[in-house]
Image (cartoon, helix red, strand yellow):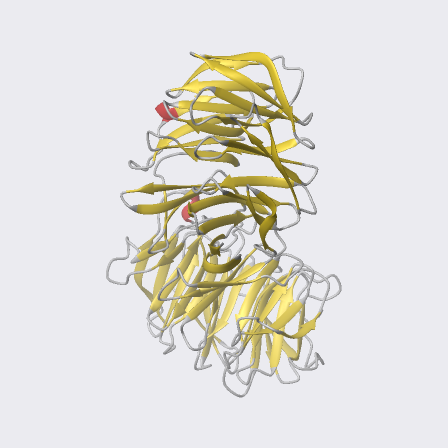
Amino acid sequence: MSYELKHVFASLPQMERGVAKVLGGDPKGNNFLYTNGKSVIIRNINNPAIADIYTEHPHQVTVAKYAPSGFYIASGDVSGKIRIWDTTQKEHLLKYEYQPFGGKIKDIAWTEDSKRIACVGEGREKFGAVFLWDTGSSVGEISGHSKVINSVDIKQTRPYRLISGSDDNCGAFFEGPPFKFKFSITDHSRFVNCVRFSPDGNRFCTAGADGQIFLYDGKTGEKICALGGAKAHEGGVYAVSWSPDSSQLISASGDKTVKLWDVGTSTALTTFNMGADVMDQQLGCLWQKDHLLSVSLSGYINYLDKSNPDRPLRTIKGHSKSIQSLTVHKNGGRSYIYSGSHDGHINILSLGGGHNNDFSGKGHSNLVTKMAVDDADQLVTCSMDDTVRFTSVTKKEYSASNLVKMDVQPKHVSVAAGGLALAVCIGQVVFLKDKKKVFTLDSLDYEPEAGAIHPGGSTAAVGGADGKVRLYSVQGNTLKDEGKSVEAKGPVTDMAYSKDGAYLAVTDEKKVVTVFTVADNYSVKNDFYGHHAKVVTLAWSPDNEHFASGGMDMMVYVWTVNDADKRLKIPDAHRLHHVSGLAWIDEHTLVTTSHDASVKQWTLKF
């Protein structure tokens, strides 16, 4: 038995309202970089379905930048660590690690010879450092600011200059190396969010929360002008990025626009309107070769079209928050992966092209805990917003009429043929038929945790925190307790019937998966041991002979029903994160999701 990682569907950037997002560009022009959680994501700019994820930071990573040579990436995290690692090999070997200061790193810049690195952020004793990449020895001092430094850049031509921008409303100009503070730039009336030199080094610009963008001489630091006269944008400006020929730049703003500027005349040539919703605020941008990219507060990455400014060429969608639930469904010969995240967002990933999409309209407003597709092609989802939704996967839109409000929070949902659904809520089990509540079990003497309806529709199994699985008989529109139950090894975390209804598998907090044979009065077929921590999720293969389980130990196991020793172990499926969802495309293809907000596709050989 063996496995191979076939595809990585990367997360979007992790976004925060009012906080700029730095995108890194590859000097060769092929890839771009951003961060989400503890991961650095490298994506192919021409085909964003091609991605690589670097997961060696133990803390949340905030920024990553390529060395001008293209051979290394420097990434910084919230603890103040900088890791410099190889880009040329799949293993991304660590070259050096430094701790320039204690606190969040917000921006990184390299000198053009790839030998010196400047980093800035929220240090306790200092807000920045500049050092040699191979020894960590200081090559100057970043001083002159009284608050957090948000942004730094180094002129890519000699003589070197360094600029910084801070929450103290000032920019600072340095000469070097060794870099020494020369003067403050006090043109902004609010936070300075971004500072960037032009590629030819002749100019630099500063962008601020006051909506202003100022242009300066790259060598002397003298002010030249303000872009757009009085104000560049109606809202704060979070990011700027220069064109490769230094004649133009783009700026991203909280006013939900990106503007394209002609530097010579300091006028806006184009305004890209990105939408009217707060999630359409623009917090980052990157100009790379012919690609103009911007990032919305939603995490969506927009490829801007100069000839059609109100409609991006393409928008990369996906998840920016941790994924909590997963299911797959075939529709018109194509497989789709549905995943639900921490913020209520549901993503539709079509296999084949690797394109992400979403449902239109207003969906869940909180964590999506569980999902399944029923026989009427409806995605049935339950959420911490106390609702169960039935959303048509063909119409792809949420509607208020397909929402069922629960009395208490649902935590698990399962479906069966004939429009049946079972929602397990806090202290309640709700039986639904054709999108309506038909029966509720409450005042229970146990806490229900998970449920499953037998494919034949005759039995509803409910697993409890007491380690018991109660088997209710489905009679018309009611669930009847006939006093029948079986024992798991500990508090139940998830459960599912095999597709053919022959087996019921139950996972528990005591690290065990137990499989019961339905036809043999639910006798124990096998216990499956291997996980080192609580097992949280499971999924049956369409072949009914294998199933997969995922645990808090970050392991995925693929088990063989008839032989508990015949198993496939996928360690570190999502490094440093436990697996939150499992689903099978076919008997040789497994999909995993995790709190790292990525989706992975694995090929299995038995």
